[in-house]
Image (tube, rainbow, N blue to C red; front, side, top):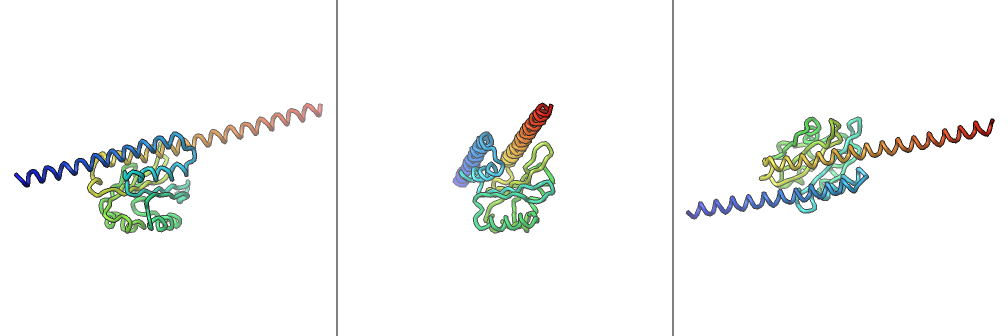
Length: 212
């Protein structure tokens, strides 16, 4: 009977830890969504999102790479990376993406890295994973891929379907936010160009009237 009770208590403890972690991730998602509503600068949005995702230990660390139209990295940010941050920045600047990022760019699905030393041996953040696993997912919206996001997580959570679904939701929310900010910027540019055209037209008509 003793070993049965011990096994039951151990399983119960694992379930409690899993539920607590899911709750922390849900809080992070809520905080990121609130950020999306009020932040209108894309770089600030991504920086603050990374911080929010690690703030309450929903994830141990996070980093995001954003690519330009030619596929080159034009922005990098992260949170809780420690000494690995400079290595990641150097790799990003060189244009050589880690294997996990290259894989994520090819599929909208979440890439689960249960054994970083095996699954992503060229990752510059490898030594910073410690005993953690990682998720990597593209940030995209409407078939437009903006970049990738990676977060470290406890190894015993890496195979849980709900954990993958939540991480995928975060990446999707950020993709939608970047798309919305792009549309907002284009609208501002159109309004600015229209205003300039109207000013030119008014000046031209006035010149014609003065000449007559």
